[in-house]
Image (cartoon, rainbow, N blue to C red; front, side):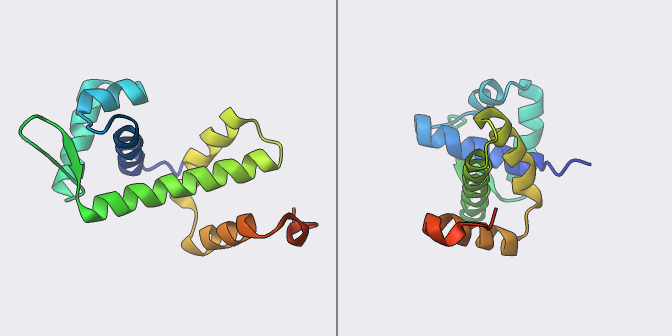
Length: 129
């Protein structure tokens, strides 16, 4: 069973690219994700229809407030889960790949608990994992 949510993956990718490049077009997303331009076009149509993104006259993508919040939430989960998995010995590549699946399925409660766990001093976490 897979928990991937492609809309969230696309939003996360847009956010990462915006942080790296400033402005993002669909072609940038296709290159970054290694997918076809038609796949990105279909995803962008859905995200626009859902009110999560918009395009300017030059084809650059902007987030709505909801789209930005969703992208930041997914990216934050991805980063945290990757760090925790690496702490327990998972390779960075596997941790990132696994985090990409987990980030879509994790409950808000579990995410908050992981954030709390991550922020505690090491001595308080002894024996927890």
